[in-house]
Image (cartoon, rainbow, N blue to C red):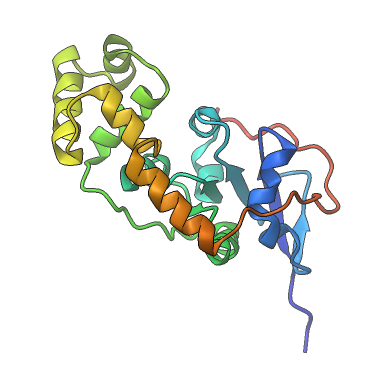
Amino acid sequence: MAPTQALGLFVSSAHPAYLAWIQALLQRSDVDVRDTLDDDVAHVLIDAPFGWTLHRLAQLDGTTRSRTLIVTARTHPAYLDCLASHHVSGVATVTEPHDIVAGAYAAASSKRTYHYRSNLTFMELRVLRLLLQGVDTLTAANRLDVSYKTINAHVSNALGKLGVEGRAQMIVHLLGGTEASWKALEAREAIHPLIPPVTRRNAASPSPLPHAA
């Protein structure tokens, strides 16, 4: 029987400490961590610190995004949808190591595995992505080539669907800063204790990401 081909993996992380999030993936014997993002390589993008991933995603071309798996500590459905709305292969949470491994294999083949979880429209998600990056209403309108009133309408619709009263409260909910979020985190921590740091195998510092033309 022919040996199984190793999974090529390119990891984008703002700091080596965040590699602990994907230790189950990095420690597999059938994973080959690469220094360049070739055509048959999965791109794993670690969503930390906040805002870094949204900035990186905006720089990537469509082909690279289609081979990207985002690993995040946040769990709000609308936030996960905001990340996925960049047309990535998938989004996995740090508390689900099996989903991270399966998602990386799917990303290597540009298979889209993510299923949207909120009832927000694509345009509402695009507006929320900009709000999460601190963009004001006028700038958001210019970037999306719509009117100031249209942006406010999308924000108002999103607020209603998410059951919150204002933009600040909405951002806190999306980022998991509510009391309910912390209780859920404590419950997950009882099942999945914090994982120790991991040393990245056979990998040098990440190369610059491919940019859109």
